[in-house]
Length: 135
Ligand code: CMX
Image (cartoon, rainbow, N blue to C red; front, side, top):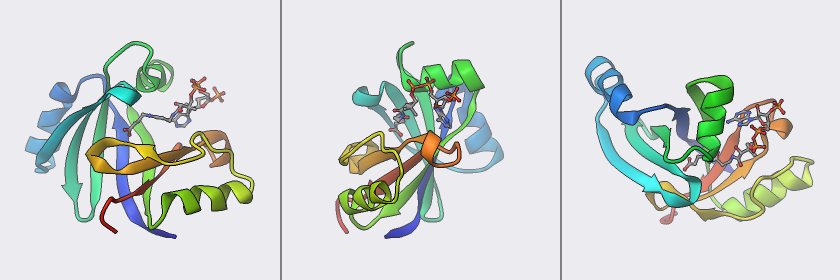
């Protein structure tokens, strides 16, 4: 069961270069910067209602986000939906024919458990499910 949009991921070459747009022009406050070694990205978070904007900066050339920027340029990278139970949600969409990147939830930024659906099965939008530790 999807409850809301947890975050929108945006690929950027440099968080530092993009911060003035989000903070000074949009007036949002960056409340956390965190590196997710596993995903080879540095992330910056802004709260907008109950949804976050997550900037993703690649930390190495073989990062999936570096590949994305090289191919498509900077911009919206993925949409993440909050689910009550991530493993149930992944299983349910898989049973309906969606190709998964992650068969099971794994650790992501901000203490969330995350799992990705393949963009080839989702109309070209890289889609993430996440589950909050405190439900
Ligand atoms: N949105 C939409 N389509 C995407 C995409 C994205 N973000 N990233 C890749 N694709 C498309 C490509 O355009 C390509 O399509 P074509 O075959 O039509 O050209 C296809 O997917 C394959 O792309 P690729 O460049 O060959 O890349 P890979 O197959 O190596 O990887 C993907 C693609 C989606 C499986 C990989 O990026 C992945 O596993 N992503 C999930 C993890 C992730 O994105 N982590 C970063 C964020 C972490 C976080 O939020 O903490």
